Image 1: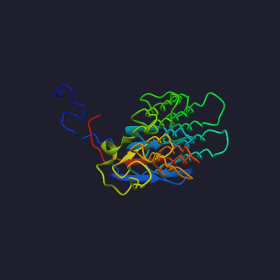
Image 2: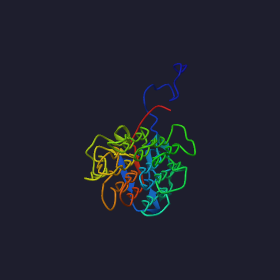
Image 3: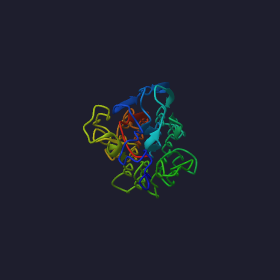
Image 4: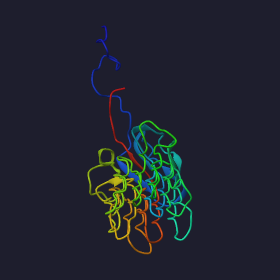
Length: 293
């Protein structure tokens, strides 16, 4: 008897070809440096998140968020140890001095690389006082331009540019994964850090134990958002960190740091040291997913 048209299962029609046998399991690596993630024996597909370390805030530009890349249903091998590397956040720029915020470090996992965020621009530096390029760009100090994001380029984009700081003005905000950093808003405020992105479509609705806890000095993260830009600094201005762990500008000795393992940029500071960028993370959700092939 002839098989029905389109059948690949000996004449039996239906979803019988299983593409992944592993139980749904989320693994998150938080320690900076090199490590491994070992998959379950039956896993063939996984959702993957790779977030790089973010840039430190400057005097007074906000630090850019670490690059963020996600892949749904990424093919993997079962019972295999995959090397991963978690990028550290960059240091905030000191005052006095002429250095911009330090860029963040790349994160790598499952053959996916996300690039470190750009440091925030520094007002004492010789022109240009621009934010640095990176996964997301750092915000500018006064008279400067925000750094380019998505550098080097990926498709889809891993981040956005930092905000500009037209004269006379405070620092622009660092770029986030979802949005560009806000431009400085003289004379009242620094630029708002760009918003990061939720990963709930791949890892589940918040709250989840593997989402990062909120910080009182940074944009919200417990909602399952990562890679927010740091706020630009302005004398007397507090706040403005991008949702996804971006550090607030704080009129004090040290600005708000990006939240650890969020890839959130450090806040800029108009009166003191910029905030450190948040470290990155690698996270996978192994999928128990049956489908036709």
